[in-house]
Length: 243
Image 1 (cartoon, rainbow, N blue to C red):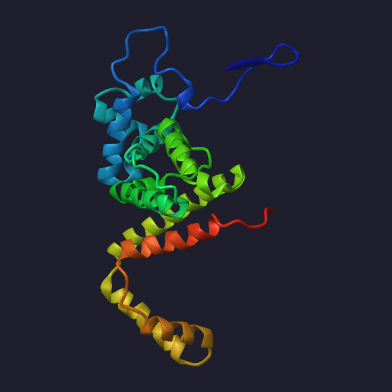
Image 2: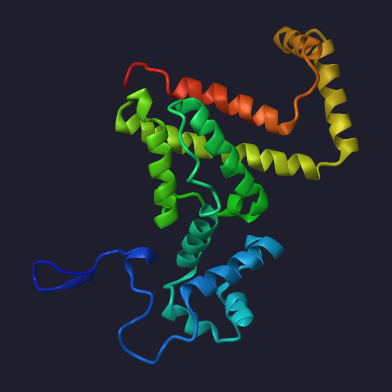
């Protein structure tokens, strides 16, 4: 959108890809669409990782010139916005809410993590607080509605969604890395930790590890994820002083 400043100078206000038309009103009919660009980019990322996605590679997969892509997007950031929003649509939002904010958000977190594990490149997209497209807005709306029974201020609810998503991403990343870790390296690290605790210089560590050893067997990743999310969300949604 153009605005006129004092002195008659015209400047362009920043507009996201969602605020620009699919194609200009003039010129020949478009040979492709944003949906096609997005699908090709997501397929590339799923197969080879986010680093493989470039404007040149997307154009090559579409059988067109790189310059032609700028009829649909202004640059790579637009493409990232489209890709992120497309896979966000895989998070089911038609699941009825049970009027239990913590459990409803835990269930949403589980579905969100599943999408991130299917598309690991999503964890490599540079985080931006407002990287939201239409599907991302639907996700935010669902999460905020889930918290309605808690009767928390809007700011607190927005912060809770942001923190929940950050934790989901961190735990999804850890789960992916654990699956790739070398068993012998994990064993060596565990032995080092045990030796350090047994030296007597770190009594708090020794006590914690002793309690851990006496606890129930190691949890499955999914059970650990749900337990962690439940404890964190219980704290986030508890009434407390506003600061």
